[in-house]
Length: 86
Image 1 (cartoon, rainbow, N blue to C red):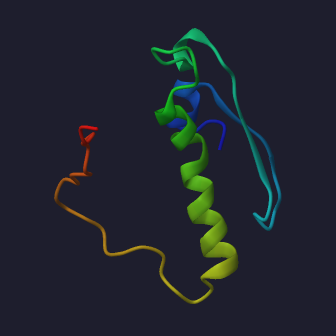
Image 2: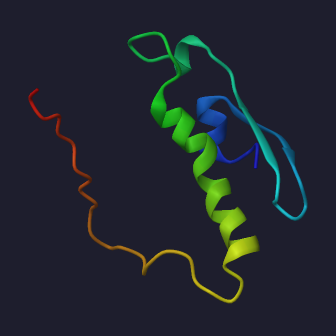
């Protein structure tokens, strides 16, 4: 997993992964490339660090014999992004 391009590009490293995928330890170092405008870790890197493992853990443990998610999408995804006025 450490050679997966999204991990290589963002400095993410898998430290430990149990064979049964019940425990995964991943590290993201706080560097200028992983820091956002206010000095904390960039949320996209945090998400990239956890996203593939959640799906693998669910498929291995909870969803035996079931499919995870929906059919593959061919169209773009448009997540909501708005901040209401106070």
